[in-house]
View 1 (cartoon, rainbow, N blue to C red):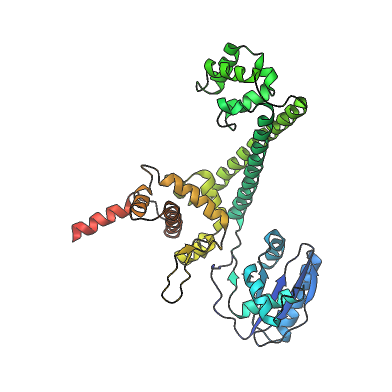
View 2 (spheres, rainbow, N blue to C red; view 1 turned 60 degrees about the horizontal axis):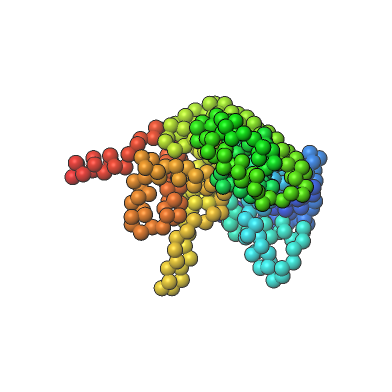
Length: 421
C-alpha cells in the first residue's frame, strides 16, 4: 500500500506533470499541465479499460514531452464515481490527491472572474488548486480494511432502510389503531412486532381472550407484559378510533413491512458475523475490542474507515481524516470559538460519538474525563466531541505502539508524579 498522509501537499516541484480530472459517471474530462504553465487542451476519456489505458498513454506522452520526473493526479471528491479511476491508478507510479468541492467552487470565479461552469473549465480549476498546494492526499484502504469498509457501508444502508420501514409501520398502525402505543411505547420491540404480525388489525385483537393473549405476551416479553396489558389492549381494540375503510389493504401493507424487517434483521446479523470473522484476521483488532465501550461494529467501522493506521505519522493527521481537527475564526479583538472542521469521513465521527456515549457512563473509561470537562463549564455536546477526539487518539496510539489499553492510566501517572515530587 502506498504511504500517504491526510494533509495538504506543501508544494509542487517544477518538473512535475499535473493531471487534473473532472470525474463523471460515464465520461471523465482530463487536463495535463505543469507548474510553469505548459499544458495541453482538456480531453475526454470513458470509464472503461480502454478509456483508462488511453488516459495513461496520454499522461506518459506528456510526461516525456514536458520532461517531467514525477506525476501528480488530482480529482474532485465526487462519491463512488471516482473509485474505479483511483483503483486503476493506485498501482501506477503517481501521487494521487483530491480537491475539496468547496474549494473548486470558490476558485472557479478567480480564474476568469465568472461563475461559468463547463467540463473543460473544471479540470483546469482543479489543476490550479493543486499548484497552490491546497490539495489533500488520498487514503485508499486495501485487503481486510477495504472489505470492512464495504461491510460497514452495507450495514449502514440496511440500518437506514430499517429505520424508514419502522417509521412507515408506525404511521400505518396509527391509522388503524392509534391506541396501540398506549400499551406498547416502543413499536420496535419484539412483543409489539409479534402482535402486529399475528393480529394485524384491531378487529382480530378485539375478539381474543385476555388470558390467552396475556400468556403469549408474557412469553414473548420475558415477563414484561402480562394479562393486565392484554386486557387493556383488547379494550382499546374494541373502541378504537382508527379508520374503518380499507383496513385489509393497510393490514397487507403492515405484513409486507414486517417481512422486510425480518429480512433486514437477518442480513444485518449476517454482515456483523462477517465483520467478526474479518476482525479475527487483523492482529490489533483484539486490543481495540478489549477497551470497555468498544464493540464489534464500532471497531470494524473505525478500521474500515481509517484503513492502515501506520500511514499516519501524527495524531493530528488522523484527526483531520475524521474531520475532528479544530479551527477557529478570529478577527482583531474578537476571538471565535474552537470547533471541529467536520471536513473528513463522517462515519468515523458517528461511530466515535456513539462509543463516547457508552464510555462516559458511570464506571466507563471516560466517565471521569467527561465529568471534569462538564464540571469546568463545558457544554455536554462539546464534551462528547472532546471525548471522541481522545478516544481516536487512544486508538491511534494503541495501534501505532502495538500496546494494550491501560485503565485509569492518567490517574496512575498523576499519582506517580505526585509521589516523585
